[in-house]
Image 1 (tube, one colour):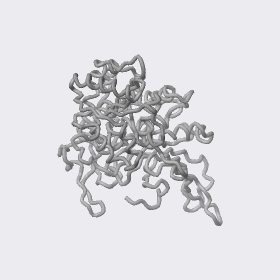
Image 2 (cartoon, one colour):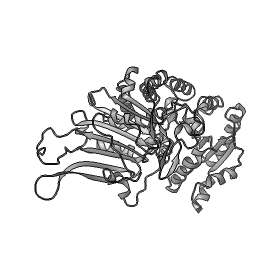
Image 3 (cartoon, rainbow, N blue to C red):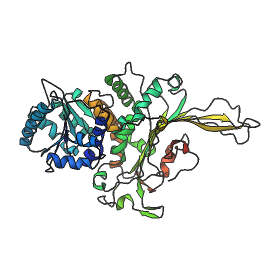
Image 4 (cartoon, rainbow, N blue to C red):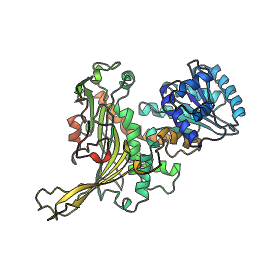
Amino acid sequence: MLVIFGASGDLTRRKLIPALYDLYVKELLPAGFAVVGASRTPFSDEEFRENMRTFLPGTEKTDLFSKMLHYLPFDPEKEEDYHLLRKRLADLGQEKQTGGNLIFYLSTPPSLYGIIPARLHAAGLSRSDRGFRRLIVEKPFGTSLHSARELNVNLLHYFDEEQIFRIDHYLGKETVQNMLVTRFSNGIFEPLWNRNFIHHVEITSAETLGVEGRGGYYDQSGALRDMIQNHLLQLTGFIAMEPPAVLGADAIRNETLKVFQALRPLREEETATMAVRGQYLSSLIRGEKIAGYREEKGVNPSSRTETYAALKFYIDNWRWAGVPFYLRTGKKLPARVTEAVVHFRHVPHHLFSGIPGYQPVSNQLVIRIQPDEGILLKMGMKEPGAGFHVKTVNMDFHYSDLAGITLPSAYERLLLDCMQGDATLFSRGDAVEEAWKFVQPILDAWENNPHIPVYGYPAGTWGPQAADDLMEEGPWRFPCKNLTDDGTYCEL
């Protein structure tokens, strides 16, 4: 049984229930399966099902699937409600023959992450003689290094580390997992995947949306906490990790942990030159007036919370010594896109430099996470005709080219993995703390030093000029929504 706390919320309707429905259609759910929504909203079973149906297709399978959905009005701060929950789960477990296997999903505000596990433990629901007990925790996993450590300690009072699944939906994306296959199954990439052949690496996660009515929450968070500490550092771990000995959860997560431990800390005095923050300003996009961040509802008019962040840093180990890594993320940028770009070094000779108009070829491997998922390799080719005029061309693969194959949603993959006990794509407590250890000095410098500027950038542009100055190795790649349209024309 999957118990969703906060089941009347947006995440359940838009992501979790549709993902479970897709698993049901693909016949990947176990025969004995049930969902129990637990939230303050006073739904009956049928009202809950009807509410969830609005986000599902109206088919016969939807009707059959909805019979798996159940609901219990529930106040997570009332101890007596946990005893009602325990009885409901026991009755349903016997009826559905779930074998005593329970997954608890915390789709709640982070303030309840310490309360619900403690009350589940007190009600005897965190341990079992028959069946498993697992706990899925949504991000944000802490808001600082101190709070993340505190949360880890609290959770481990009531659940073992093997029972805790810290979910990061970015790691559930097919193209993130494909990074491992691209690197470790191809003899042409892994021998080059080091400081001798790679010049620098950049990772971008751009959004066209602003705070969309969540100004009150976002103003307490910011881009560094919201995106870089978790999503983008996890992507960095997959790109930079050493080959694991086996394809297992602990082996893979041990290697990403080593990457985080090797991150060179940024000293406070380096923050101004190695980290850039910005806020989007009001502008006109297609003739429409777009409000600036400080004009958004719920945002402090003098807020210094960043909606854009860019970092330059190094990984101090044998493979990556001296290779700069760049991360950037922001709201109200020209395109919604997430990708990693590996920039290879130029060839060491100048055979074609005397040819008029020659530009050294910059070999790049672009791993597109979303949208238009795929891989792009940029390489030099001879233009047809006389002479040796060199042109950069694209070799590309798109997942959309695979006939009859649809990409599963991130939550679909991650929920199934949790049911099967596979923690490969979930963050481990020690890795979360190491990521916070790297980010915390930057947060402290931004908070404590008023002389470090917050740069403005007009909504609909690629961020502040200072972020371009950060990139000494050449300009950032400016991606389009279509993977192969770079360098030609992008609809912004």
